[in-house]
Length: 360
Image 1 (cartoon, rainbow, N blue to C red):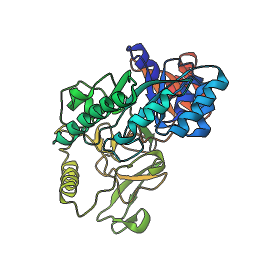
Image 2 (image 1 turned 60 degrees about the horizontal axis):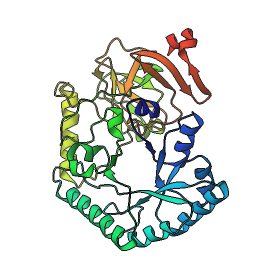
Image 3 (image 1 turned 180 degrees about the horizontal axis):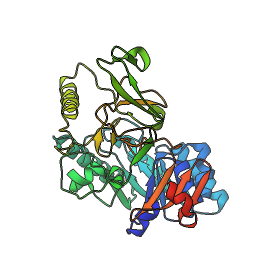
């Protein structure tokens, strides 16, 4: 993904954690890399040595990075995270000027940018998101004036804001879901997307369960008729079904989930362009309902209506790319042809191993 972004003209990259940035450096990605999660003091030396751009939210960590940069004999660019409404990490607007001034006093640090994250850029009512953008711009303006420091880069827009809030684009954007072909909201400008990720798993066993047979932990599902059940070796540990829990008392989400299940049962979900949600399983575009509670490494699905499904049949499992387990083997395609594979034991160049490519 990093190399594709560079080939497409990206000036720099952003990742969530320091280990992700180090992984890119280990694979000879030399572009500027911003780590969005604030650095901790003990990580300063590692980040500086790898020429990583850290995020800081406190003067103490900034000082630790400054000392590490001095020991390394180099200058280090940094970004500040300003909390304007998410309530997670970040310095509040009232403390931004003070942190700017303290960063300016650090001999080896170069303030490169200040950013925030928008809490509701995906909502139908964009007034709160617009208010947050305005609050961020005003906070940076005021802090610059008070500290006598100029901020070169301001950024606020992730994927949803790119679609819905042109005023949030500022100096750069941080797209995540859009890179995977995932549209995070129905609102906003149209954008042609292609899914960049498909997860597949082979059926391990198919058997017919008699009426009245329980399926899964707690027998949460009990068959009412003879049912062909296929078991695939993926589950919660692989990222399958990792969706936020819906509170039953919230009528709207419950109604939508119930309607979606009904449309799936009637075979109308795909025809209406809704697709299968996270936790779904399909064979050749035909949905196979998940039966019972999903387990950590196994999932059981109803294939009674899919007579051609047998042991070894390949299922498409709907896993969010950002939730897919790192232990799942990755096969990378270019123009539909497998060119490399990444597993826990290392990477393979499939162009030099045609037999492996065929199996992939």
